[in-house]
Amino acid sequence: MTSRCADLRGASLMGVDLSQSNLSRADLSHAFLILARLSDSNLAEANVSSAFLHRADLQRCRLHQANFTQANLTQANLLGTTAGETALLTNAILTGAQLPQPLKAELKLNLLRRLLPHWLPLGRDQCHPLQPSPALPSEKATFFSNSSKLSLTPGLFWLKR
Image (cartoon, rainbow, N blue to C red):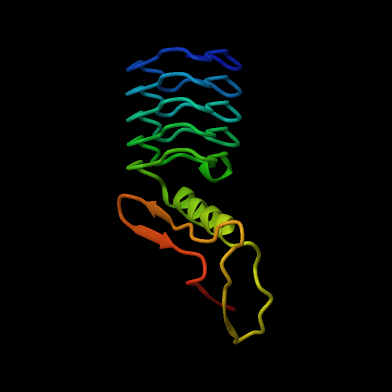
């Protein structure tokens, strides 16, 4: 299926098979793609914001600069996706999602950037405790994946360079 620049805003595509589709620059915002098969599709620069992709199959999709802001990707399969680390995943729900290693690493790095106000300039072998962010005085963030749990609390870090 070729649907480049398609306008599918708010569409109900539950259980649909869109494997190997070209959905680059498509607008899938607010779409219901529950149990949809999008494996091997091109979603580069697609707008998938606020879409509901619960248990969707996104294996081997190209996600270069796709916008998944506030999308629900609960239990979605994103293994083998390419350029997922360039996708915008602000406030996306990824509970139980299967993620490739580069995307996991990028999400953990983004979480650290959000919790840490700035990197402290340190000498080569110095350790220095990071101060809690004034904007996030008691926030504790937890990142879950199938294989690990990363729990971060401001003020409990040591940064060593």
